[in-house]
Length: 113
Length: 112
Image (cartoon, rainbow over all chains, first blue to last red; front, top):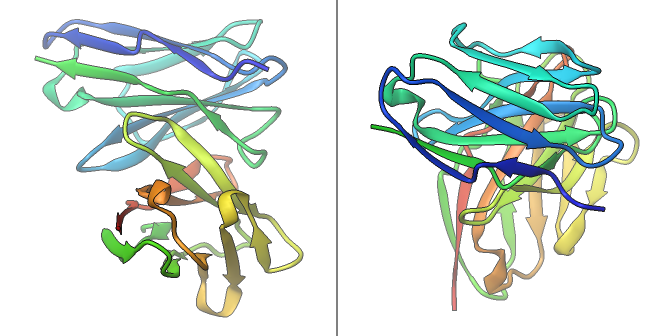
């Protein structure tokens, strides 16, 4: 089985722009979670999607949003980028919910200049 | 309130020595507990998890962890560390609303 894939792997944007990151889960997995990893804040939960519905959301501003498609692929969007949004964004998939084993992708490294 | 605490930011051990990485959680109900490892530039890989039952959990790569409810701990152990174990280790808990909270991580350095 192919693992979780994330595109792009690296991204450079400037402040004020918006960005869309993509995540393809393992085939058959219906739950997709997103995390932000920074040296200062560590790993923080952004949101989780299941069957095209956002099931849970972390404590991030509304500039961070996401969606899930019928094939379980997910995208997250960050609007009006700030310098502090520079981070590694990780996507994880699991069969039905995060209490199952979550499989992580390699992440997208976003740099905001 | 912090859900997961990893008190050691950085640990150095000699190759072949034993290892214990500490993890404490603050959570009222029976938690779902996990240990993940992250190598540089990589995503996270699950080492082991605890949901219920036997409090000593065996994982991959020779790791094990013990759940101690009385101490709210879930420490990760390995009897003999290999140089390839050098990485960052994260303890995590899944709360009732299904979001996963991670500890700050412990970076492991292995001396030859």
